[in-house]
Image (cartoon, rainbow, N blue to C red):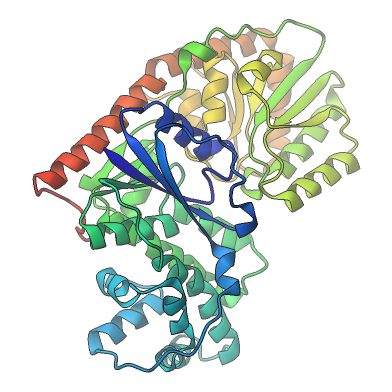
Amino acid sequence: MRICVICEGCYPFVAGGVSSWLHGLIKAMPEHEFVIWAIGAQEKNRGQYAYEMPENVVALKDVYLDEMMSTHLTKPRRRPVKDKERETLLELLRCDRPDWETVFRLFSRSAVENVSFLMSETFLELIQQLSAEDFPYVGFTDYFYCIRSMFLPLLYLLGSEIPEADLYYSVSAGYAGVLGSMAHVRTGKPFLVTEHGIYTREREEEILRSNWVPNHFKNLWIRMFYMYTRCAYRYAEKVTSLFYRASLIQQDIGCPADKCRVIPNGVAFDKFRVIPQKEPDGWVDIGAVVRLVPIKDIKTMLYAFSLVCEERKNVRLHIMGPTNEDEEYYAECVYLRDELGLENAIFTGRVNVLEYLRKIDFVLLTSLSEGQPLAVLEGMAAGRPAVTTDVGCCRELLEGVNDDLGTAGYCVPPMHQSAMAEAILAMCDHEAERRQMGMIGQQRVGANYRHDQMLKRYADLFDEAVAAYRAGRTDAGKEG
């Protein structure tokens, strides 16, 4: 089977998180061929991949969003627009519920030709109407450039050549989900979606916190991402999530319940469970395996650690992860660390987690949003308890679902510095309880979150989708 994996802003450019998960999945399925269809931010990163491609990756097609900024556009020749097409375009630009099959047909040309629509008389007429109806108290020029910036990436991506495959598989909704939907509509081949976090909720959080989107346009941007996600849910054969609560959110956004399936993450349990406990050396060592990006909220981690250091001097924080994904944010975190005088907070860069966990007493996560964090699962598999924010399924991992094992750590509200500090201090102060929590977490991972269990579930999912396609049975296209 040839599987085309559609990635947005992760594999193979960025290490850790979803990228590590996908890299492991591909390597564990040598019987299948994989094509990577990757959406990157900057063309200068072409060829600068965080991973060496596995042997069963037979092709890599990468498209970069900054390329569209250097595209030479010309005003297109005016052509008549049918009533249905006009209505679809209005729905698309309004970020509502367009007829996506009409969208895919209208923008089936090259990327340059697609983007030239934004210079057409038709586009100008449509946004004049929408501006008068939806934003009568906002300057037309502001609205014009807002809409252009919103839809430039979409139209550019819709001009991509679709790789040949038996199955299209997106590891997020959003732009990747729209490309998967387009591939399904144009080729008829099955399409699947896996969400590690809820894409729309993460984009919503980013936009609400942003200062680059004017307040009067924030809701429109948020609706755009919900629109893209509903597109992916509609054309996917199945939509998977990592835990039950996430599946309910997908259904609330618009995914039919009979398309939803929960497949928990899995880790190489046998590799992690043999890692010995750290030998006592007078220090408590905390490990955060994390991407250094704003959604991981490293700043709250540092502020909380500064409160801990006021109470204890024999504690160290090891922040493990690549520093080049958002270099500006990393620089801000280093500056904050230095301003707070946190000599015992160490940015290690990318490390071998298996080896580094030998130095760690417990793990820490301060994310604003998560799915089912592999870093926490790997720490638990190694017998390390965790302090996490109450996001994604962190509480479920630490407290269990329908088991009587007990608690494997502490869960606190996001961005709550003092609550995080109190939980870290409790973990530092009670070594016997900490070790007991570590044993509980290890048992929970061994029972429910093993890599071999996860692999079988995905292999079955891929086989079922292709078999349903060949038999003419499909749920793709069902309205959500």
